[in-house]
Length: 614
Image (cartoon, rainbow, N blue to C red; front, side, top):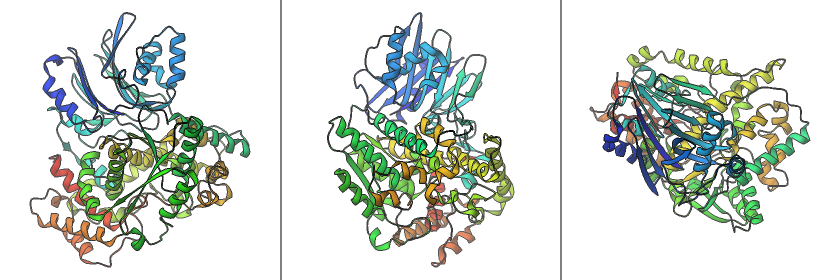
C-alpha cells in the first residue's frame, strides 16, 4: 500500500514547483514509510510514498514506462489479486516486464486495453496514469472504494491525493467548509455522502468510477455497478459457491513478499478468514498463521450484555486460536491511551470519526505493525450477507431513514439554535436518504418485502460500508500497516447481491447463508455465535475522561466549537451522571461517551486544520 498525489496544470511550469510537491508528498509519509519519489514534467507532476509489500526492487514509483511511441507514468495505491493472470495475458500480447510488481502489470494493462482495463482487475486500488503523448490523466478507484482518492479542480489546475491533508498542503486549497460541509459533519457524520470531500471544492472519486482529464474537460463515469437479476442457483449450489468465492478471495489476498497475519476476534467473519488463511499457509508450507486480537484493560470486569453487543470476544478468540493452532497475540488497550489517541485519529482520518472505535483500531494496528506489514480483516461481511440488527428488526427495516442514524434528535439536541435554523437538518438527511434510494437497481417482479431488503443492502453497501472502509484504511495506513478485506472481493458482492433474502437469512439467523457455507470449516460454537461488533471499552473511566475533556473545551472561550453547539444542553448531559442514550446515535457502538468524544474531536479538527466556516 502507498500514498499517492499529483498536480496537473495547463498554465504553470511544474518542474519549478518541487517545494510544494515535497510538502504534499510528506503528508503521506505514514502511508508509505519505506520509499518516496517525485516525477515532474511541464504540465504534470506525480508524488509517491511507498509501503513495500511486493517486489521491493522492481516496484518503485512513480513508475515510467514506454509502450510503442508513448511514455506513461503511474502512481498507484493498492494491490491486484489477479496479477498472475493479467501478466500472462499481457505476455501473450507481446509485453515484457522488468520486475514482478503489480504496479508494472497495471500500467501495462492500461497501455494495452486503455480505460477498460479496470474491468479486468480484481483488487483494491486507487491509481493515476499520465499519458505524456496525449497529455491526459486517467484515474480510477476500486469497485467498493477500499482505497481513497480525493481531488479538486480550479481553472486549469487539477490536484489529487490519497488523503484530504495532501490537498490541503497545496497553497491553493484552503481548509474552508460551508453549510453543506457542516451538515456532513453534524448530520451525516461520521459517515459521508458518496463523493463528498467536506471541504469546499474538494470531491472524492466515487467507488467503481474512473476520471479522465484533458485540456478541454474533466469527465467521470462508473465502470461497475450492482446489477439486479434473478438468482438461478439452488440453495446447495449457492452455499458451495459462497464457500468457493470466499476461500479463493482469502487465498489470493495472502500474496506478499512481507509478513502477513490476520485480525481475529473469534467472530464468524474474522474466524472464517483466519481458518482459510491457515489452510492456505499449510498447503503452501509457509508456516504458522499469526493472529491478533484486541481488548481493553479490565473489560472483563466492566463488560455488560446489550442488544447490540451480546457477548465478549475473549473466550471465542481463545477457542479459535486453539482450533487453528495459530501463534496468537493479544493486544490490550488502557483507557488513558485510548482517549489520547482520539486526537491522533482525527489527523489520521482528516475528519471527526468514530471516536474510540477509530482510536482503538489505530492502537491495535500500531501494535500489529511491530511484527507484520500486511493483515487480513473481516470487515464488510455484515453488509454483504446481512448481519446487522437493522436487517432483522422490523422497526429498523422499515425506518424512513438510514437505520444506523435514526436518532437525529440526539445530534440536533446539542447544536446551537442558529446553526440548526441554517442547516435544516431533517431536510438534509431526508434528501440524502432519498438520493440513495433513487439509485437502487430494482428487480422487476420482486415482492415488496424483498424489494425493501434489496434497498437495505444497497444502503449498507454504498452508505454504511464506506464508513468502515475509511476507518480501516486511515487508521491502518497511519501506522504503515496494509489491511486487506477479502469480503470486499467484487465477485462475492456481485454474486450475493442477487441471492434472495430467504437464502441469506436461512435458519432464521443473521448471515445464515454464510454460516451454512462455513459449516465444517469452523468449530460449531463459532458458527453458532451471535453477531457481536468490534469490541468497545465498557470502563466508566472512558465516559468520565471524554466528559471532562468536553467540559474543558466548553470552559475555553476561544474554542471554535462554541458557536456551533448549545453549551447549556451539553452541560446538562454532562452533569447528569445517570443520563444515558438508550439507542446509539450512530451505528451500533456510538452512545453517550462517543457523543462527548465526537464533539471533542470536532473541536480538535477545527483547531488542527484551522478550519474556516464560510
